[in-house]
Picture 1: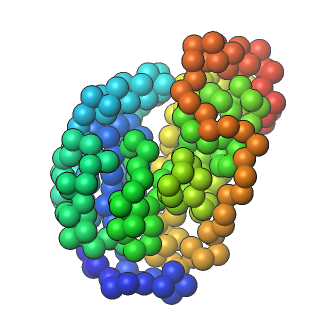
Picture 2 (picture 1 turned 45 degrees about the horizontal axis):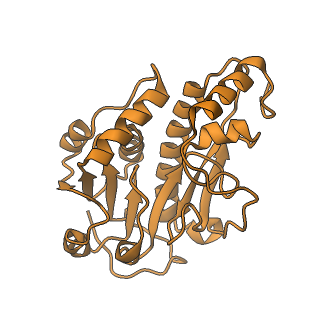
Length: 253
């Protein structure tokens, strides 16, 4: 993969971006996103996978949210198929591995399901750190976005955005709604946002190569909602009731 010298985002790119893909170990979010990136012809130059108790907890939590929906092939399998080097770290927030990232001299860092990351990491890639969020920004920042979207009658969707020192507050690139049909379950919505988020990230990298980011990038603006935390059982029960009894405000049928 060609690694370019410093670039002007107004320039029409003719090479694929060299980027590192950060994720928690075998996170379903990462597996789907990596599949989409590979299909779009944009495999990462390096996968940096966190193996930790947090990674185990988050993986199990997201798999539960997906119910019986299928998950893309494992990161290990996909990396082997595409010959992508993989580095394992104990915690992405530690700085001891950042030398390897600097040595890559990346255009971008792409997040495929991680902790909230701040600090020196954000300044290493020339053209930014990108995340795909399972909710529409700025309306639904934070965790468990499909649940809070239904609970507060916010449209369900996904957003690809730049990362800054805040939580889901960086500039927007792409955002798109999920069509929520009557009869869909919470697990259906979680799967739909996972798939859409991966597709938007792949679309964002195609747009980067085409030099289209200057036309797409815009600030989020303020949100009228708080930054949400994990949805407690009573909120999830409310979400399931609203979907089952048809009282969610944004069904398309």
